[in-house]
Length: 522
Image (cartoon, rainbow, N blue to C red; front, side):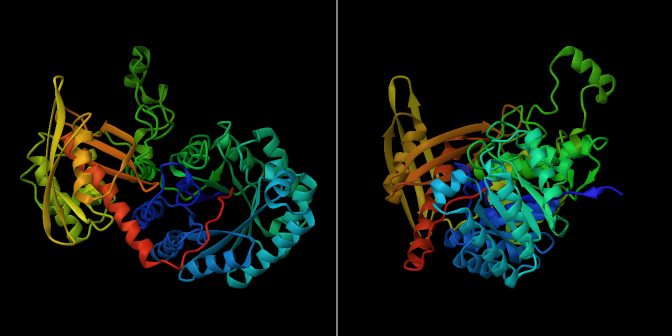
């Protein structure tokens, strides 16, 4: 019987630390549902003490996801651990994940503590965490640059205190497979109580070796891999979940380890994350990139047509990639639309279905063919995730080579039920639209990134706009999709405006009760 490797997903914690990948509570819950459907063993939902938003995310994911273990990261301090447990208290399967650095570099320059002090802090932290829950994970931050004798001492001590999982992170992506193999093997040989805990690995991708190091560690005896969807995370990111899982599946002859991932959900998970964050994978990204199953060279095409195995080591279907169009049109009813969404893996409430259907019929009037990508765009863009203070009623823009771009925008203020219209000029039609929106809302946004991409096929394709906008020094991501790029641009910007206003309202409501910010880990 094959041994099992647990898949620990940290997309909602370490992954969210990637620039441009922050998520609000509703977006985290949507992603958590998808991770649950994917079959991950552990969802690390956040860093509970970092902020009120992180605390709420851990608490709500713990309440929502009853099958997987739900973990919260915390430092080795009483306040952190107690806050983590407060967020996890309603979880069906809670895990407290505490960490402290063990490398001399971090001890000297970051912690300014001795080895003895860190050893004692590690002991006390695990002991306290164990008083709340049986499932306690300890991470030795920057383990791959730590003195191996000291690492053995720390790991032995925390297992003595009751740690059930010991994580050996390559925090800065420094190690290589042979060295990592040696570290894991040494721990298995020299830590006398290692059989009482699962060895976990958490690899960053600074040298592009995150997946390779993770697989090497498994071969050496690790039985939990910490990773993220699309490999997002600090700096160059984390080991990519989809690459790890498919490597284990395709090369089972060399790595005979089982896991619980539903591989057919990989592509959907990747797409869901991209739609939430606005950060898309490169076309040649392994497993989930647009070109992952594309063949252009004639000799490759000939071989694939004869037998796909000639140039495909896995099938598109095995990771959930579909190329078939769907037969839905403006005469289709709610039942047919709901059925299609169910086939795609999404269960909509009646209000959500009503809203999706309204957007679907509007799009069906504009497009000859409706594809799954269109339905995904409706789902991601059409179902509001935050209160919409301002709604777009109308937008009109003009531009040309011999005239300045101008725009006329009409917005509805849902707080006052007032309709406001304003005009503005700009460097181009989109800039003019944004200037007009600023005049109506009273917020001055600074556009720091703007991306347009076609998400469906054909001359009447839906274009998706992502706008990263800064308000008062804080960046928000807005997104929208439409066959009209100016319309999508306006609604993407408004999406960011509404997020900024929502954040201000929440901050005002919780004024005086803010938790201290903390540094990221692993």
